[in-house]
Image 1 (spheres, one colour):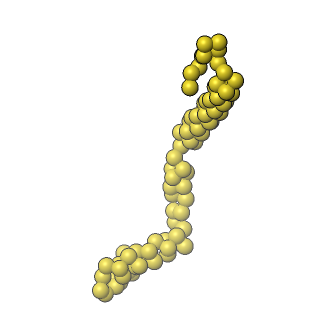
Image 2: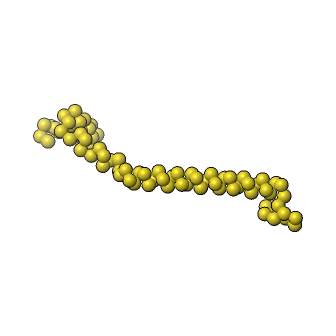
Image 3: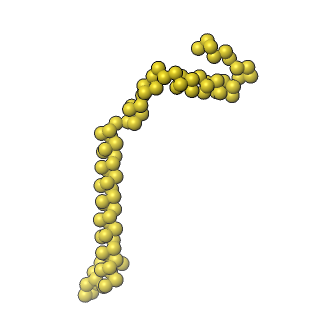
Length: 86
């Protein structure tokens, strides 16, 4: 597509350029919003840092961990180990 013809851009070329300009403007706005989101995420920190320790001394969570260990042991062992030792 030529930007300028012998007399100037054709109507079709003008419309195409306007469409490209509109699309570029929209794309630039989206990139700006994405950059802002990423900046906000960095400022807020890592989400996992916010929950570390939140289940400390929770007996129900300890039971969940114990059951998870038992399931994993059953996947690898022929005989389950006695979990009362640790």
